[in-house]
Length: 405
Ligand SMILES: Cc1cc2nc3c(=O)[nH]c(=O)nc-3n(C[C@H](O)[C@H](O)[C@H](O)COP(=O)(O)OP(=O)(O)OC[C@H]3O[C@@H](n4cnc5c(N)ncnc54)[C@H](O)[C@@H]3O)c2cc1C
Image (cartoon, rainbow, N blue to C red; front, side, top):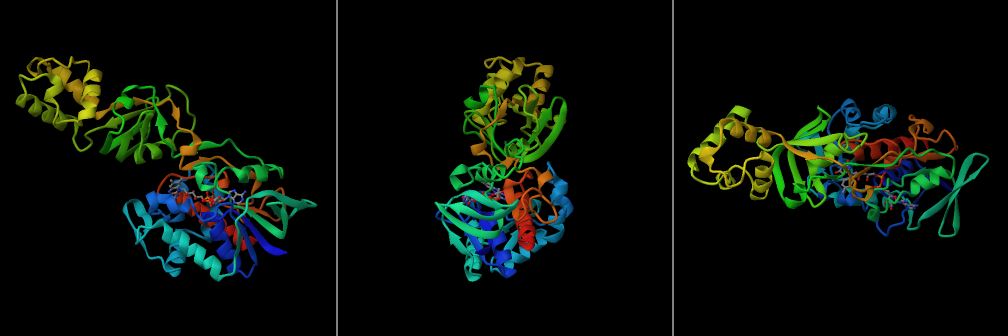
């Protein structure tokens, strides 16, 4: 008989294992992969944006769905606690732009390995098997079944992650295990995911990466997200950091509802851009329009921008009217890309949706349906924007569960 069984050796599971063991509990952790923390090791492009160095209120502001559920967990274990925890484990951290916290080494492996070492030092037993069932007796958990063997325990933590990036092990088992015990799973949707576009010109610009542009996400005529940064055109539409962040602001995807307006020259006002175009035009008065704007835009973008401008590519620059030039400037300040959908959940950074927060006690992370059953991490219906907020959700909920198990 073990005190605590944890299902999943990802960010939340390992974190909970360390804390439960520090509270003197015997811990058995099941991880179906050979290695612990496979997803954790690829976070932040292999650098792991481990948390956001900001107060709990800022974390709540970055959680679009069910932020209040996190209130108690953040009060018990916030970003400062996370930073202290990893530094005490010998992983020095640094804070970058937007309060994003990374290991000084820029290696996500250092975070995952530190957790693994601490688990070992505390005597956490790891079994590399897939849990297929949670056992209950009289409405309370009494163990799990894995690989045909039953393991007994008074408490079980589901920390199986979501359904995105399934190659890392998060294939949605947590939802199946919880559903079998009567829990509700809200609709699962991709979040922080590339976007598809019906505009064929995206594919024509495939591989083109734009830096220092401002991406505006429009819901009808209302701008619901605007940020400066980097994005990319692909064969299906758009991707890159700005697009992933914008995607998590789309709550009700419908064809023709959302579109992007890309400001290709955010450092210039409309007037400054017009002056710049005039200068380029005056140096190329006898050239074709398509050749006279080479300094202004990346090569792959020129044929598309020319087409959208309505000015014939072979028109001589000296014949272009002031009104046409002004409109061309407007196009550069608001380059349109229509959005038709999300890429599949497999390609999403985060699974939005999950175990209904109505059925979990936010102060303990215990199930309101089955006694002794706990939840932590992405399996719960809480998700956040980019910036280290998602891992903090995993750590805070894991700490709360460990404390109460
Ligand atoms: C490419 C990428 C980059 C990211 N970068 C960041 C970042 O920089 N900062 C940030 O805050 N967030 C980031 N995230 C999100 C973050 O990784 C997740 O929110 C976090 O890993 C969730 O932790 P978790 O423990 O709940 O789930 P996971 O880390 O997915 O762990 C779940 C574990 O459970 C195991 N498991 C599942 N089912 C079973 C079973 N039946 N039996 C045994 N084991 C099982 C899985 O194998 C897996 O190891 C990123 C995500 C991706 C995909």
